Each structure stands twice: as C-alpha cells, then as structure tokens.
Figure 1 (cartoon, rainbow, N blue to C red):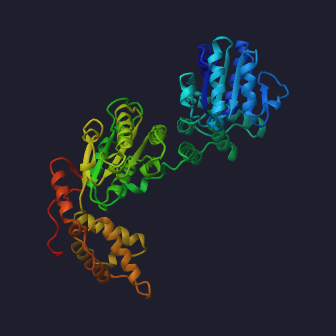
Figure 2 (figure 1 turned 45 degrees about the vertical axis):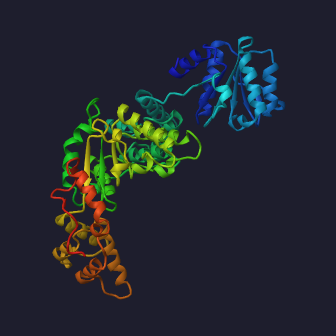
Length: 504
C-alpha cells in the first residue's frame, strides 16, 4: 500500500464528512479513490458538471440527469446509499447559499448514513459554516527514492518503445536530475523525465539544467518570485570586497548537504538608493554559485483578507523547494514596516516571515536590502535570524575606477582610451548608478555625430550632475552615523566621511 493510500484510508475511517483536496493531479486522485473503494468495499462516485454522476470502481454509464450541482446535492441528501462522492471542480458553486446548505445537511447526516463528500479542485475556499465539518488532505510529493523509480520506469519505457538501447547517462547526472525534481508533483516529475529522455535518448547536463528551469516555472506561475538561474556573471561585480570575503568563507558550509545545523542563513544590506545594494545581493548568489530568486512584495499583496500571507507562505515554500538558492527581498521595509496604512497586514506578513526565518531547515540564503533602517522592526534584524548587517556606502576611488571600466566595456568602448584617474577623481560622491548614467548620457550626447564619447565628454556629464552625496547630504550622514558602530562595511576602505566639499 502506498503512503497516500494508507493516509487516505485512515482519514476516511475517522468519520470526517467532508474532505478537501487541492491538487492539479485529478487523475491520480481518482486512481487512489478507485483503489481505495475496492479495498474498503465502499461505493464511490465521481461528479462533473459535464457528465453528472458515475461510479469509479468499474465502467458504468454516467447519470447525466444529475449534472447540475443542485440536482446532484439533492440526490445525495435523500439517497439511502452510503458511499464516497467525489465532486470535481465544485469550487465555483460554493458561493450559492443553497449549495452550502445542502452540503451542510448531507454532512450533518453522516452519523445516520455515512456519505463522504470529497471536493477536488486546484483551490478550494470552504465557507465558514462548513469548515468545522471538513478536513484537508494533501497528496504527498514524491521523495528521492520515488523520483529515481520514476526515472527508471520512463527509461525502461523508452527502451521498449524506441527499441534503441538503454538511456545514456551517468550516476552524477542521474542524481542531479533526481535532486532537481524534488518538490514537484509526481505527474509533473514524470512529464519532465519523459521530455528529457525522449529528446535524444540520454540524460545530459543540458537536460538537468532545463528541468531545473521548468521546475521553477511550475512552482511560481504567479510571478511573485522571479528567477535567475545562471548567476556566475554576478560574482565579479566591482567592489564589495569585505562582503565577498565574508561569503567566500561560508560558501562550503552553505553548500554542504550533509550539514544540518549552523549553515549560513542570511544578511541585510543597508545603504542609500542607487548605492549598489541590489548588485550586492546578486553578488552573493554569484559567489555561492546558486540560483537567485527575487521576492516581489508588490505582487505579493492582495486586496482579500488573508491572501497576502498565503501568497508569502507559498513564495517561501517555493524558495525552500528550490534550495540551495539565494532569496533576495528588495527594499524589505516597504513590505513589512510597521506604522503603515495597513499595519495589520504588515504585522501578519512580518510574523510569517519571522517564523520562516527561525524555523527553516532548507539551504536558502536570505539577502534582504533596505534603504531606511528606522522602519524595520528590531526583531527582524537581530542576530540569529540574520548573520550580519552590511552597509553599502558610496564606492571608494578604486571601486569607482572599476565601475567606469565595466560600463564602458559593456557599451563597446575601450576603457584604456579614457583617463580613468581623472574620471575617478571627478566622480567622488557618485553612486555606481550615477556613474552608469553619466556614461549613458555621454553616449546620447554624441549620438548625433559619428564621434564616440571621450574623457572630456564624460567629465562634462559628471560636472553637470549633482552627486548623491550632495542631493541627500543629511540623510546620507545620518545613515552613516547609524551604521558606523552597528554594521560591517561592504567595501574595503569605504568612504565614511561626509559629502565631498568639491560639489557646492
């Protein structure tokens, strides 16, 4: 007996009148109940709005006269036959008070005549008056042994159908494929395995990477989490030497699957807007060599009560299933700050996040960024929930030089043709974003001619723009004062003095 079949049998023997199953694996649910009906000798029926009522243990003609929801519920209420009634995609009809009342009367009569109602759909919001009569059942996701069994089953099927020999692979790729398929349903796992094998009769490195991307799309179709799989290019972002060293020292501990305790948990990156916090979060994923998942608080919030917290729980579950990975929460204070217009939702979101941060066992490294530390609750930033606070200050001279070289090179310009020393000196007080914009502006300024930007053109752009150190003079100094004794500078030799006096 499979674990799902065993759990389902125990549930039905507990005399619960309504069972709720949220699943996209309708065929698998029906197969379980067909096997269970024979095992426990209980008549079982399926209902759909297209076919009506039909037995599932053996082939019979459907009762199409019972296709309407009201008709089938009235039939179940008065029928003298006990049994299991599986209602497929009944969720749209739960808004009708008549349907709710009929369901309740059938459930309340369970003691006299056991009729178990099973509601199966992709999502079910049960009315409050039925919640105390209901229990939810969740199909188990396949464990690693089951995934390996599915791979062998599909490989054998390919060999029988294709008559082209055994599937070509090696033990390492086989294990990687199995690991990447954990966390999704059995039906989805089988489909992805089949696609990988039938492409060329082999399981290759490209197949393993393709499966991981497909797994992400299955786990987060709503767009609450965005995904960067290839993060190697993020490892060489300019500056952030202290942060990079800190991450490098913990990389092996984070990636070790045998390490069950004390693996690195996360960091908070504090700094001014445009200062490079987002790049720092990407650099973490690049140095660790794992996928980067970005949680979008804007897509997370929902107008319906309870949905925002549900969306967050689902997003965090997705991150757990994608581990090892980095979960980047940008401008975290906007999502959980207290004192907002809807403080109740913010507090519930905070509670959900704090619980996950404290209890998670998965290798998900949290990289959160914030502009305003005063809006963050102290319980979020205490040690134990995060490992370290890093302050991303304005880039020091050697980092500004590297930033110029990077952005010039990205736009097809040779950095050696520019006086990087003069540009570095003239850009004191600028953020990395400000330097990039100066390069872009210089390109636009020369777009009407055939000439390319030179050092003088870039210097003109720099001197015509007020740097952030002047525009946000007081805010930046307050932030530096707060961070001085509470955080670790992300840049080595970072500028901790006040704004430059060269910009009036």
